[in-house]
Length: 320
Image (cartoon, rainbow, N blue to C red):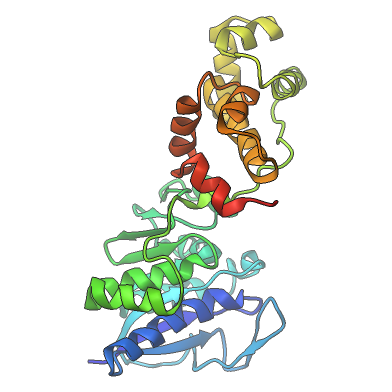
């Protein structure tokens, strides 16, 4: 039976959110030597969809069409202007109906925000682009957001992180449908990882530190960032600001929703990422400059936060 693979694209959609998954399904047809997947684009209406790059996509159908054809998989693509459609008249109910007529449903990138608004993510594990993951978790507390994941399958729901991870999501679905061998062949033909190393947080921005909280706490953050090579801990931070360790911990949780140790680890890893990208310093030198007592501790912290080793990160992100 041919599987209808439908992606909803709102005006302003990122083209790769749409074309990436559909190309994976098309290549799976090539590898199988038969038509298993029928990729289709759905619009809010029957007009052409202008993408964020200005290229127009012709919709195969409208979300309001009274089509009773079963949909195998229904995905919502992301867009930089996705918030413009969260309160779109009738869209929420239409999304629920499309999900109900599909065997699987899900989102690519910030498309998760539209599904969340429709209540389709409640009680589910999901991922989305790292830049909106925090907002998704805050505005929809009934949704379990895993910000570092590339793709997540939870029951009938499938979600992908950002933009290019739509290809990873489609490849995961191909593997579910026809097995690992075909999925491996598709990945090879498209010159992509079968399983991408690390999580998506290794791609998140880490330039200037985001100072938060009351002014005294911001002063502490500036001082700490300027002296990351020192062996800071809870006691040294508390001593600098003139508070007890317990009081400082409460203040961090109240203002930043992080413990001092968690915040300090984030700053050290952020600086290590910068050094790995832009210098030829040896790992031992980077560890010292970031306040890690050994290369092994740096490596463990890197894996804990980014799910990738410092060596892998440097290889993938070197600017020199």
